[in-house]
Length: 448
Image (tube, rainbow, N blue to C red; front, top):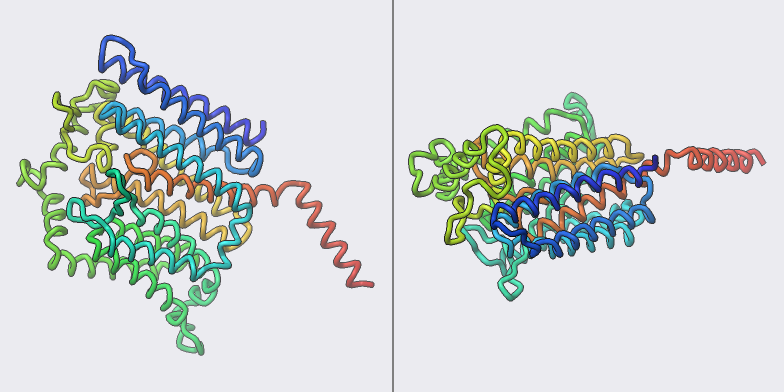
């Protein structure tokens, strides 16, 4: 069975899961079966089929498991949004369509991802520029200045796009400097150009990004950027010293930020003792913990947990963005929560497989960095709502409500699939024979 046929086979249960979930929510909401969400569900299915056809035509050797996994996570997110507020689900379906179009455009217009390596510094400056635009023109919501208003009540979050640009910049730069950076410390003193000189530009770039997000009061994104940087420099050099040094700086910086930023003090205090102010600053986290406990082992079922009051307000504030994992676990219980975790673990596993099998350093670092971005973002938000770490406010990839996150993550998956296709296509028997024939021809020319 070909990779694309395998992918199509796994997309079928993802589609069935979505339609079954919508029917379950509709039956729990009213005695009569509502057909309102059905057109949106059919539209989302058409989008995923269009992405599948695009891969079949332009990237037939790409990994067959990434797209179905994204389909399952997106389906669960859309079903839960329909349960919370059908209008949100309708908007999200539109954004999935936009994300699918961006996915298709990326696969069609970027046949070789290595072209990005030629624009290393331009891409890096674009990432910083997007954060600067947010800082100057952004709208402050709930204390954080993350969104650009585009009229009609719609906003975009440019930090999501900056995340991908940062990964591309780091992959290209570390690819060029990794041999110098990987030199053991004991040999550094005998070198004319120490590794610190090679690391200085990327540290300056990272410092600029982190300073901007600190100014924007978005420490979740700052933590995400730092995690991506530490993961990628370890992938590039294999040196634990860099990771340890980065973690040490993070601990020191976090202590300093905690002493001067009241918002961070509140987040940490609420994490340590959410029930100390259960009706005030700790309300969100307390309600999230109650929702998780309410789910039990298997949960009451979709549409049956107490998540929405009679007036339409949600029991947990901003349930549709920051607390989507809590919503799913409240309705599907421990089993549903573990299922979500397994879905993200599968995404991470396939992403690192793509990175490990890639043929060149840039592809390895790019695939590893993109995978780390998805994994870290999922860990940060799930850890926050379950009280493993303080709340960060980042979105749960493919599931939380938000157009910028959906579109950016679909492009991210497209890049991973492009890398996978080029790697697998280069290792097929015909490709190996072609390389052998070219090498033989070169030897004959040299002999002549």
